[in-house]
Length: 356
Ligand SMILES: [Zn+2]
Image (cartoon, rainbow, N blue to C red; front, side, top):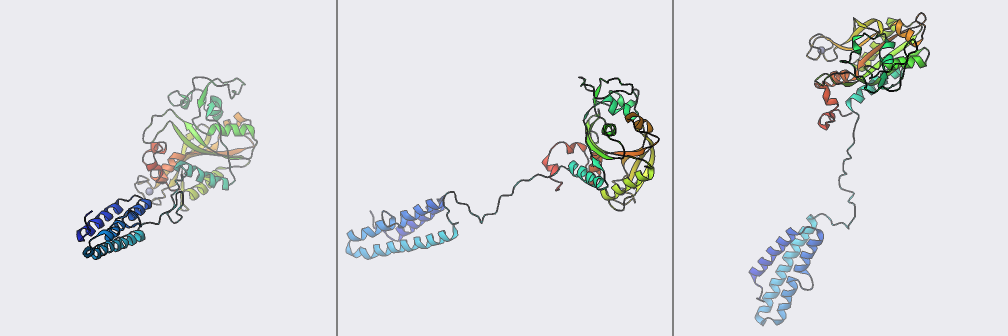
């Protein structure tokens, strides 16, 4: 072995630096250090051993180079140990590390809107009831004063089920009806509720409904509605207007005003379409309300006596009102969503924009 000199010191230091830099773990680094500095079989130890057999005039130099190398490596090692993260025993947990964020979901925007509507109406004393989505024609149409020739019952608008389920209802003269449909509105549950309960009635019925619509920006074959029904003695149009105004002011803002436009539904008389003053411009006119200051949100009316007759209520004694609105429509307006299909595509890039 050649005797160490100044170049050998520089070479060993360069080798030490390179190996330490390549160390992948604290254990690797420690073994690099030991190879250069350890008491046995290390570079420094082997240089020290040379002293005994070296020519007398070289002994002092070898000792000095070995010492230079040792000190230089110790300086580097101290610096490395101070800057490297502390080594942990296998399986140990470093409690100082930042925690991993837990991925939590949140309510779907349609659920948020539905929950808000339910909250407002339950505070007014309404009960929330749900009903079957597969209905018989009687509950979906006949009992709601929509006779066999009514256009809504057309196969082009309504989804009829090919295989008749056991008849769920009967006609007024007691005949079972074989045809079943996917309900076109939640009003069918109002009929079921009235058949099972005597007035006073104060319910809301949220749920999915089905129409034979093609998918586009504003239509889907399935969407959700929230309907309401109040029946008691002495219920008037004033109760209808007051209830809906209280709802609008809690749902769309305290300054909300309502506008009633005469309309027609077979199961209410009189009937009205209801617009709420635009909550974006407060009625002044803007893009959202198409410069009209009003936004159409629901249909309503006083329950038609024929409906009371169908469920066996005394139409002379009781009056009531009902309304229905689309949950998607309200969500689209509130969140400025341009395409109704986004509600159903489960795309997180869309859903994560609703941090509720
Ligand atoms: Zn507006």
